Image (tube, rainbow, N blue to C red; front, side):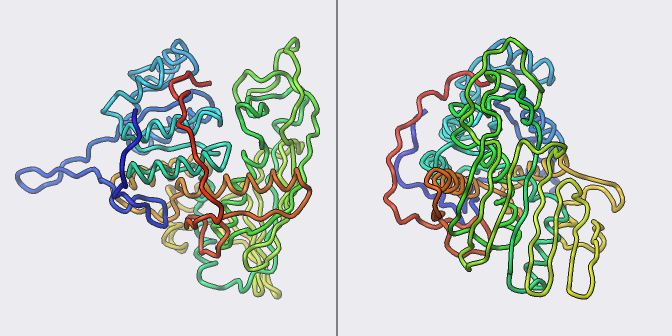
Length: 442
């Protein structure tokens, strides 16, 4: 596929959605009664754990999943049979040459994301790209620029934004009840790499990138806190640690457990855990601990926002409630769409008292993505601009840890959310077009 030529009329707005995208029309009958909107057709790249999540969410959102591309042609056929889809593609070119596909979900190892996503955009597809969207800022910027040139939507699954109580909290922050921020702090803790026998392709920097724990899960924490609190971290100090010096050579699916006892061992160069201290553009102190080696912690994303008048806590493992504190009282607010904010109510797919969690977050994110493809502008939809912001945070964290010094975060101008783009002061880097996009996926 060749790159689009000339200046594109499809300028991205501040929310990262093309200002003039081409919505899918709703047909009408001769009697004026609307026909059912045609189903969007989707292909999934990658048949691992997260690919399964995308598959279920796409189907729950009304799309037709027509095919899958895995790491080999044989695995593609096996995945197509397992998923009950019509096509197991032999390579990426076969996906891109199918003009009936509207959206490509990129769910592959990190180093493949940008090449596949850029190729899909140049083939006229919209893209849902797993995070990190790229392993370097330069490549993340290339993806954002390509989306703008193509006039296509790229969304990124920062799906914890889609907990209804996160939306409730953001609405309360916007209403001004907390006062000026005093301190923003928290943690994101997992234990799936605690054992020296546990491994994943994410451990290999050639596949996962130079950062592991921060790029994989710390990025979620920063996206959520910046978006909810309406802040930007302008500078930070990071310290990383690798607690397991050697692991089995990667080769299996994420979260599948230990490797065979005879597997060759490799030196680990990516971080198992880290601590980050930062300052926002307004000077507010921010701190977070991120770990993939904390025993008993499965997926504990937790943050506290302390304001001059009130504080609040959100715990992703208890996502149906918020803790609210004032000097004279504390309370727990539970999800109830009859009294919650309009956006929280919009994302409540079951009545109060019936728990919802991560699957519903992902489904609501995909539904909003498909709504944007059809021409809507859903509130809080994370786009490629948020992926670029995350890449800049990863870059700053790794640079700070290497230099053991405070490091600025580019694109940190004041904003009411993390989706507004600002030009960097440094000169733009030149990018060579990726050639490896036709290769097989893990």
